[in-house]
Image 1 (cartoon, one colour):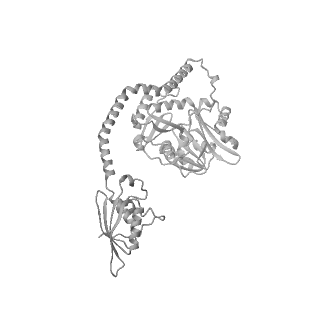
Image 2 (tube, rainbow, N blue to C red; image 1 turned 45 degrees about the vertical axis):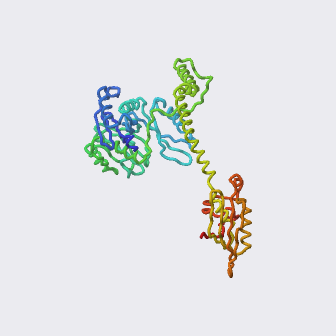
Image 3 (tube, rainbow, N blue to C red; image 1 turned 90 degrees about the vertical axis):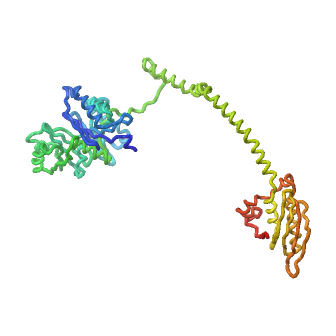
Amino acid sequence: MREFFQTPPVFIEITRVSLKALSERGGIEMPLARAPDGTLVDGCRERAVEALRRFAGRKSWQPAVRAFCGISVHGVSTKKFSLPKEAVGELEGVLRLQIENEFPLPPEALAWGWVETSKDTARHEVVVAAVRRETLEYYDSILSAAGLSARFTVAAFARDCIFPEAGEFHAVLEPSQNHIEFATFQGRAPASLGILPAGADAADLIIKNIPVANYYLSGDAGETSILLGNLSKRASCRRAEIPAGPGSSAATQGLKNGVRAGFPFLWLQIKMEPAVSSFNLPRLDLSGVEARRWLLRGVALLVLLVAFPFAEAVLMKPLLEPKLDRLKSESLHFASLADPEMEFLQYLKQSQPPYLDAIYVFSKAAPQGFKLDSLTMNQRGEIQLNASLQSVQQVMDFRSKLIASGFFDGIVVEDQTPVVNQPKVVVRMTARWKPAAKRAGLKSLAPPLLKAKTGDAGKPDGKADATQTHPS
């Protein structure tokens, strides 16, 4: 899903004579024609913008494509600063002061960045690289016109990512027809960069000006073969094998490898984050026309925010009133249909004979050994019960419990007959349940279905009654 909304990143190398771009879709490269001031001629700039736009493949609804761009070392200066440990918390401010002292241009006129190369308990080593801000702003305008959001570094630093086996102190060289770009590294951190002239004595110049333990060459095999042979005789030297294809170079491949691995490149920032400043309304300068215009816009926006809820109520009232009236009429119509049905259902519920309640009371009052032979009830509340109990005393206790329940009126033992040679008394009883108005105050009754599921709630321990009833 993420790839659907965001196209793959593009890795670009810009030199004085060419532009190379590489991505997952392939690569392109094109020659660059420059004017005397270093900018591209009009036709070349337009061709470069159009070629990069087609190559990036960005749709109109997609965000700008990320571009990681390496520039030539021409015009780039580096300095190494040793800062006290206390300055790390305000590193940018301290570096601005150092740049003002060490560079010919102020920090505002430069696109610069830094990377920490070493840390110890007392000092921090920082390498700063800087280039004229106009240079990167010009490149950024070309890439922005092509739909790219670019981050810039020095191509010589990016080439180190194609040598993962590089030693502690080494140099990466990129020979060309007229010059040799180089960058030195201490571990994986950049130390310095520069340009040496190409020629027959290039190996001597390299040994003299770049005293490192290991040399790594990148670039075209034809341009590096002679230099590789000369350097190999005097120092440890090897050449990188760069995949062939359009847009493939040591810088673009190094950017690709480093970005994927999360390598901390030295990124050149065109605009540094502004310093935090306090807002002082009395000192606000309103003498300018533009400042007064923005103030009026802010006041107008504040008025709109305050008035919007009230304006919304006034504007939406004509639209909501018909809907409210329709809801009220539908509610009244529904009530006219549902109220009679509800009254009828409530009447049925209130007039329903309490058969289950009566059986529940009988079950609660039945003693041990109680056997129900027959039970007859009608809607008028007349009840006739035939049962067998173990003794006359149980008959009296059973009748007393029924009277104490308050559910029945007129509990009469019509007949009780002892069975010869058996602890058994056959009983016939009649009763009548009380009217609904008199039963309404009874709280000892519970729904029989609920009792059957949860046990006897009347018992303190919540256990079911052990009494058994046996219908005939």
